[in-house]
Structures are given as C-alpha cells and as structure tokens.
Length: 176
Ligand code: AMP
Image 1: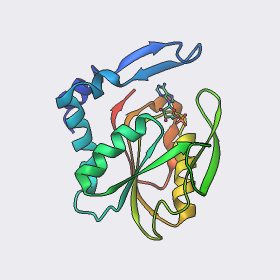
Image 2 (image 1 turned 90 degrees about the vertical axis):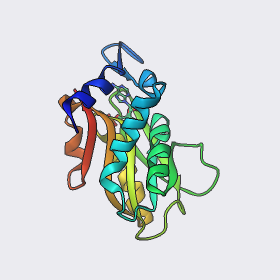
Image 3 (image 1 turned 90 degrees about the horizontal axis):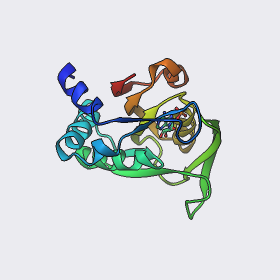
C-alpha cells in the first residue's frame, strides 16, 4: 500500500463529531463510497491478500460492512454472507452479543450461511473497540467455517480493537 493511496482514501472519510452521541467522532465513509475510483481502489486493496486463496465467502457486518463485503466477494469470485443485527434474518441463526463503542448489541448469521471448513474473510467498515468483529468471528467459527482474514476499511488504533481479534490476519487501509 502506498502512502499516497492511503492519503487519498483518508481525505474521503469525513469526521462527524458527537454522532450518534456526544463524545463519538463518527467516520462517515459515504463520500468514499460515492467516488468510483476511490471505491474501486478500496475494494481492490481489501481483496488483494486473498486473490487465488480459495475463499468461499466474504462475511459483511451490517450495515456499511455489507457494501464493502459485496465488492470484495465479487473480486474474489466468492459469495457474500450478511451478518445482521438481531431479528432481521428470517431463518434459524447463531447469535452473539457484544459491547459497542456506543451501547450494546447482538448480531447473527444464518446457521447454514457457511459449510464446515469453508474459507471465509470477514469485512467491516471500522475496527473500533473490536467487540463487533469478535462477535462475528465467534458466529463464523460456531458454524464451523475457517476464518482466513479480517479486513477493515478504517482502524481506530487508539481503541486497541486488534487486541480482541488476536490470532487472526488483520488488515486495514486507513488508520487513525
Ligand atoms: P467496535 O465493535 O467498537 O469495533 O465497533 C465497530 C462497529 O461500530 C462497526 O460496525 C462500525 O460501523 C461501528 N463504529 C464504531 N465506531 C465508529 C465510528 N467512530 N465511526 C463509524 N462507525 C463506527
């Protein structure tokens, strides 16, 4: 990854102070998603480490993770699996709860979302405290799939989210 490319992507992420609550600086990625070259660059770089590695599915976390995971899945010739907030998926699920930078939440995936041993990449927009990604990883592994990597567009390094996803290959394109 070149420093220039990283700076270009970073300039398309807007800081929104005190959203959705006081004290949080929300990272708004909608300008990046709306810029075709930057979006393509981000998707290409998120997918790059996994080209030719036999990845069967890319799991994306609701909701901005869906947009990135779909692009990465298409690049890899893999399927895309939504990991959703509790109550949204219509069939039997595995559910996990976790603490968020702001609040508490539960996410779930269909119990048959992956086959046993499938190689899976997990994708989300922001690694903050790491609770969301850790919960998603627990779900994927309960189903019996094999996580080959975890990729984020943005990493908030000062929140030490990597501590919660220790032991996995973790990548991020933009760091704060
Ligand atoms: P965490 O579990 O603390 O790592 O939080 C990660 C999840 O919350 C991701 O799905 C993000 O979409 C969202 N999130 C957390 N902090 C922020 C932030 N500062 N800006 C935008 N999204 C965030």
